[in-house]
Image (tube, rainbow over the protein chains, first blue to last red):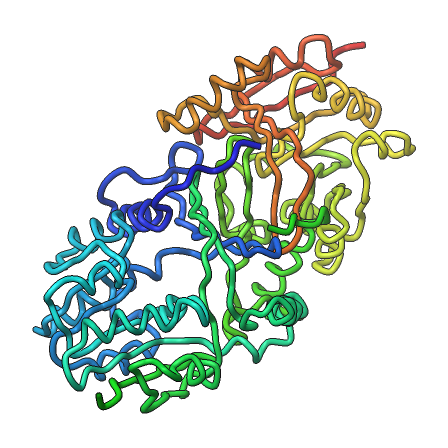
Length: 259
Length: 259
């Protein structure tokens, strides 16, 4: 089989999902006629593959899970939406008159977010953006974006970059999922094998695929609240509250330690 | 990455889709709580990957496209539903009091079809089943199952097996899709490369994946009506009518040549 091409998988996918949702622009077609629902395909390094409809990346506030609304109520001041994607949450903050910047590494996602009306966008990693002058009061990592911490090696670097971007008293609001409630042997076995290799159980090794494209393999962290607390040790951030109303999902609020 | 395991991908998938649709039995869960829609993942040998919701394999008659209803009106006498899957069309024929056998090579699909009430099922290829004594008046290959002809090498063998299973005057009703209406460069280029390799343009080389499992690579034929006519030359079957109301889909009706 030909290997997929490395590319902006998320961007291509969300561009098509936007076209399907709005009816604007060329859409992927089935049988040359019926628009297909756009499916996000995720491969894990144990051979597991899963597909899920991508339309939720464009969901309007009335379609959101309740914890997203609670997360937005925790945002104050100038907010950086990290991994903003197609602008789902950043657009709502902007609508509410808040100062919000959407940051993403996907050119296609930033393009869709701008098309949808998001005014302030940055195409960069947090490390790259930390060299800019702009500073923030709130960092939002919603839609399971706590995963962007990747694991014990990346997390302190990532969190240091956020501290550089932070105003005094800044707050980090992250949405995570506790992976350890499952009894599915496929996942339980994967967690065990990860630990045997010196990784966190839910330190997933993934790649996304869409049509002819693939991402490189990357780590994405699904961790418990205890594991998150451990990761914060020695970083400029401390955990100040956890909203566990929608288990296994949680909203973790972190604040800058006094320096 | 670990390689996926070769297994009954379609059966596993349709078993989960049945659990999600009915709420009966263990279902694949997202985040340990919300049932996921089951997604069929198809890889093509040029690296293309596509996902599509699998629920349509369980669709009730009021959810079907119109050509499926027209196809069922063409069935008469004892009918063999080839590639019956979860029994979608066979169950409706049975409900109408017709003699129908559902044939599939997927143990999981046959299991679901029987659970849904299909009484007469066969777990076999058409070649294997042709050694049995049973004979049929109608062969139904719906849900794009014309693809089971695979290509110019397999088609005459497949069609000869059906002729062995046929009573005099038997009829073959097959649902196909003309692949050549597309302008999508991904597909147009694939068709060209196939022809350069001596294959039919729409002679797809595919494998299905679901969770940890994969099928082997197999050919699945998406052909025009002209190509179908060519494939029938020298076989016991002749094309007698084509319903092209729902282009690019078509229903081809074939009958046994006078022998």
